[in-house]
Image (cartoon, rainbow, N blue to C red; front, top):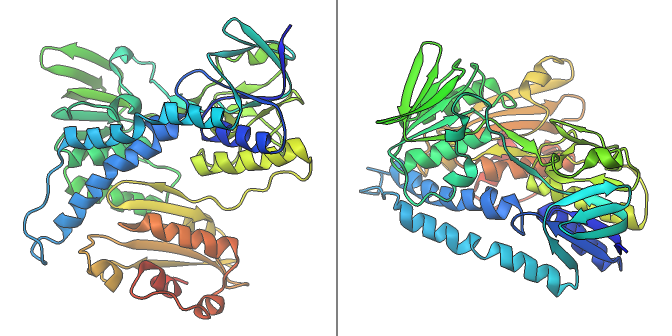
Length: 443
């Protein structure tokens, strides 16, 4: 007879853990199942270890910007020591997460979950059953299906390299390609980013993407645009990439061409759950085509960026929905960012969308490079495009390119979500001189 629970959560990453903890606190009997590492992608092989590596890059960059302005000699990246620091954090995630779940008296199973039939979920040789199921299995890096695809590595391998190769190539100009290229370049590698068209980071403002690429090019990164890699061949001198009128030999090739949802081993067809390459289809209550199965986080096909904070937001919503059903989910504005050098971040309505409605919106385009906030640390570039609604005077969107864009975008998120006008902002006294004290000049 199958073990019975109120809810089975499939996926032990940030979304699944938040889901299990929240339901347990509400008195539900919960089982959480994980097929790989407890804690999921973000803390084990994603945003957290990436940011640890980037911390050294940021420190090096800050010192470089102040050469001749009070500093002499820029530090070098000690890759083995940096990797040891990263592993000092990530090595404890799996056991720490599992122990945390057990400490809450949440039942756990390690293995691949597979729906056999409605209300029958197999995990290895065990079968479990529940009133409701929550799928939170996330995504994994996509591997381009080209000749020699077996030579591709992914971000997972990059974030655990013992040594940085002399030549590193990223195929795909999205978040991952730009961010890891920044790290590899700072660590001394000869870096290429190959993209199939002339519009990498297509979700971001085209002008500011060009500015970012110019800055990265000045730092030594080569962008090979309009290049559709057709094959990878292992040679005596390295890995050779070929495309039309293009050849490049490198030591490491990372497939940074996006991510795909982890749906293929779940047996979703057996329980009537529909999905495609974008993820599992859900309604505005995060419910799949099967009314007792829900999907949250990166594995779901929702109209929001696939980010760890969004997964947590959805988990908190669904905990409430499974305990006290109510209104449909309503997402706040969600900031997104690229941790390159400099950083690129955006939230809300884009400048491109705003210019299509000139009667409704005003776009402030600002070069802040010489403003005191950026002058003091020798910033090479600080740009902003801020969208203001003419009728209300409220900020409704912003795109930023600077060394502190990741901090500033959170301020703009608050301004947008709380409908703060310029007079509202000026009724506050913010610490000076700080990036936040610049906000009043960006309206």
